[in-house]
Each structure stands twice: as structure tokens, then as C-alpha cells.
Image (cartoon, rainbow, N blue to C red; front, side):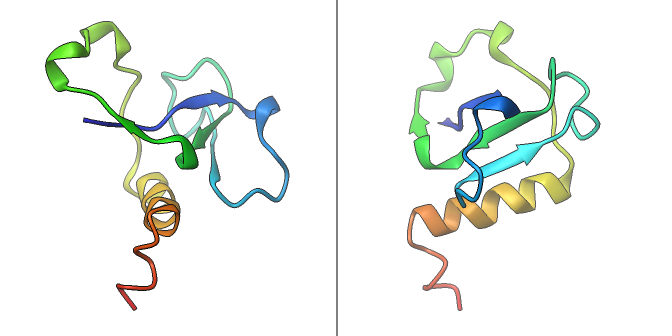
Amino acid sequence: MLIIPVTGVEHRRPGYEFHVEISKLECPELDKDSVAKVDQIYCVEVREMPDQYFIGKLEIDTMRRIYAKLLKVLNFDKLLK
């Protein structure tokens, strides 16, 4: 399972291209407006993830924004053009 850390929007770095803002409107399960830190991805085994770590589901438009940044941080964006 691929994990992308999420933190409060107050921790975002203005102009930093690998932070994707997620509003509480986009994901009502969040406590507040947040930022996905796409440059800090890591993997864990699914069996090691207890159910309480489930945050919620994101809309497809939000996931597209995250995927675009993920492809860029992994340097795959140039391969797909």
C-alpha cells in the first residue's frame, strides 16, 4: 500500500509544487483543510494497516491532482508525454 502523508494546511509551503491542498469540502472526514505531501510517499504492507487509519475517500478530481504530482515526483511525467 502506498501512503501519502496528510497534514494541516497551515504546514503547507507556499509555491511548493509537491503539496496538494485538500479542502474539508472535498473530504468531509478530514478535521480541517489539509495538504497531501506527495514528496513524502512510502510503502507499508496492507496487513500492517489497522482499520482506524482509514481517513476517507477522495473525489476523482482530487486524486487526479495527487496523481499528477506523484508522477512528477517519481519522474514519470516525462515518460508519459
